[in-house]
Length: 307
Image (cartoon, rainbow, N blue to C red; front, side, top):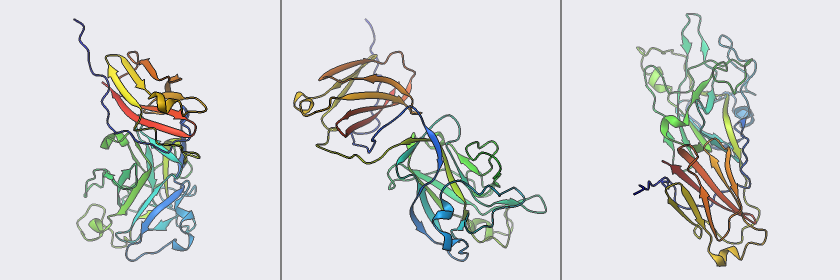
């Protein structure tokens, strides 16, 4: 007797997300929004140019031995300061390798050591629940603010750009919109025996946050009723079924459309949902996918995992 395996594990409850469109094409960009900031103690360099100096791309004049010192390009958080940056109308999705880089004005001192003012990094999809990247307080591995910026290289290529890059897969995240940068320079400044100790440390200086694989999103322009709680998803072996109640289907004036995207934003299947739709997914690689069903400005979104 043929053994049936459950292919899809629902990782999120049904929810309406704010996607106006999801395309197969992703793009790279610097952060465009400051969602919150809490200034720390001491240094206030660049505050008069805030927030423009922390948005967009890193300072192109920065080099390993010549860090950015332009207040129009960087802004100090101060000791213990914290900022949340991100994208107003886009979601950063996980892909193979690094997903974003944080740029500070670290530099090589005359003795060859790095002048580092570290920060810890946490990320979030909703701006409420943040997941922190692990870091080592001595080596500063996993921190931002320890690698000089190469402003003459592409900020979208972490192999040459400098800055400190982060991979969402490290913490099991598939997509985010918010990045929290929290200065932890005190762990260096308060320990003269620390490998990165320097008595002139004054706190993390934000240059830029750059995402490598963004998917556009924007608020819906028309909402007749929530559809996420009405649509039923079921799986059996290699078949994914979508059931739209007849009463709900009758309310759609411009018809339904649907797509299944992989974790990198590439469209795997496009379909026109009926009251009952069965999709063959046996040929797809195992992994995370995003199901989107659209109708007249309404969006049903669910993440599934093919096992």
